[in-house]
Length: 437
Image (cartoon, rainbow, N blue to C red):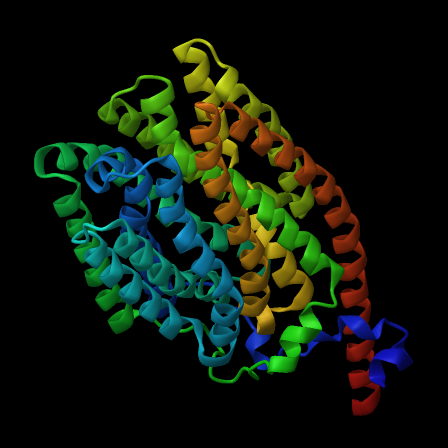
């Protein structure tokens, strides 16, 4: 009744029914700083095993005696379970707190990665990756929600970008050390050693990390709120942009080592060096993109601009004839494929409210991982069918162009919804003043 009396649309009410949990705080105290550092550390440990699969894939394929299509199925299996666990993970994070879910996720993922290092049959490797993907889902939405809970609203994109920063640091360390360790000890001891580090990081996080301010006072969302979320067009547009985003990320990051080794004749060590440089370029660009978005106050502009550059770069990758041109294309792709991570995840949180942050992140990331699943499998199958990754990378460029169009739609929806939310909040404040008078 209040919403209609004030003259704002009833459909935006979810963003103002956040309870006291909407209150945010900067990580200036010991708990906040320590928790943010632990999330980043856990992401480093997580990516040592997650990125090890594509980097060591040539050795894994030879050991298990599988082709490119079956190798793509290994990643696709984990991506599929990871995708379908996104919404449950986000909802459970909102309801029970993100810290607990994050700790369980890293523990389960690391334990199953340890098991993966000992399997010798393809079907066992496939099953292990499928179950591990479900645990990995407990890292994403809870991790982003935890970082957001320790940051003020005007810096949330930057804070959320730290999640991906940890992943890039882990990938960088892996790219430098992984090939050397695999060459000396084999891929299995290398994989097992990285998984053991993940178990140690999970213990540290479970022992010392804290939920954000106001977590115990927040009104948990109901299951009906999940259905209500799907009525918002802005969430659907963000979700399809996430589909594009992760298809572009996984198609590049998973198959780049194989592309360099099989199509361009690079050694595994040289491919590892290229991946290390790629990770080094990606790490600061992710946070830089979030910072630019926060400064401009215009996430859709950052999203659309990055996707436009990626569209041209994805087409350049298979077409580059010289090694310097190829390395330039890889460098440009590396800079921009994570540039809009923070801004894209920020939009549904700022529009719908932090009370349902985990659920909104989980819903949109479901689409992201469906994109990653299809991308990894399709590029592997296309490589087997055509003998080249060319058509796969061209398809990724086409997806990026579709993402530019979606970013334009997102800009219009975001402007309208934020204006409606401001109107709703101003009206609620006016009614409160009248009642006090």
